[in-house]
Image (cartoon, rainbow, N blue to C red; front, side, top):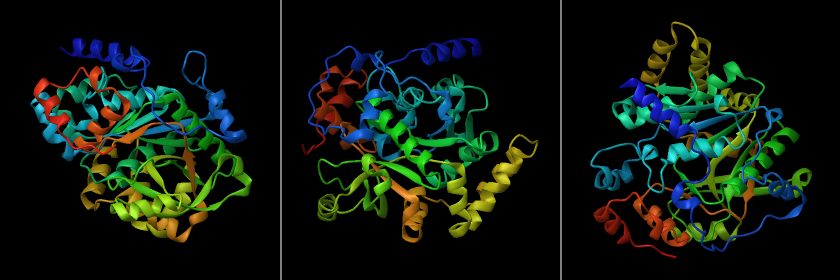
Length: 381
């Protein structure tokens, strides 16, 4: 049985490119912005003739894929689809891959697979599909947390594994519940963010999507001062983070240049470790303790003891908002243009994506009844 699971995992690992339902169709026209200026020309140059970004080992990149959430709002849809409670990141809503598998392939356009660390919850292992998907990852690159304590611990746990092994690397964080249509272009913006960090390693650079409508379900970043030293990248400091504002506030944020916060960010370990002890000493020392135990016989017990003491911490709301208040110059927003992006946190969001992109007729996975139910979700376009 183990051999069959391993074989299936290896087969899924070697499938590259877009999901079959996306790769085999002509993509519909979606009105999007265009990349501009000299630095954004790097975005276009980064795409190879094969349609993939070539991995450049000189970049010294490591990745974190966040897969520790439970996605409770999508559980009713998942139950209609599958009849179980598989966490949403492991579900393939479109095509042949789950959101997690799609995120791995996206990250691997820039980063070698053995330098991508994934965090998941131990409770997820009760699902055979979860075990199948993570079994194809390189050894030691899936970090299991005892419990879901939100995105703060969920990010810091794999981060400590990276810091222990690759302290001089640049880290890229990828949430695993996003739908991205133009993946190569998006990853070229990630590469541009890497260039920004190279210019100033003290910065944490977050990718922001220019909104096409006021969206109350998303988090927003309000840009501050435009940096002259990075004017060609259109990068600016971040003056404020706003989580899930009311529609009228979201409209005002857009008028003021607000961006949707993708939570895709690029930074050096030293930059984050410089900021954490100043404002979050308890979190800092708890995870320093974990870092010291990594690779030792005490690692598992240390992680469990630490998580028992931890309160849930949201990385964006609790950590980034505080940093923006006290050290706005350490945070940069890099606007992403020309990319259709959606955070799949609700049935409404999936339905809206399918309708906006024209992919609805190519949907292969949803059961007939579940698909009809999804089609009844009210969508504002």
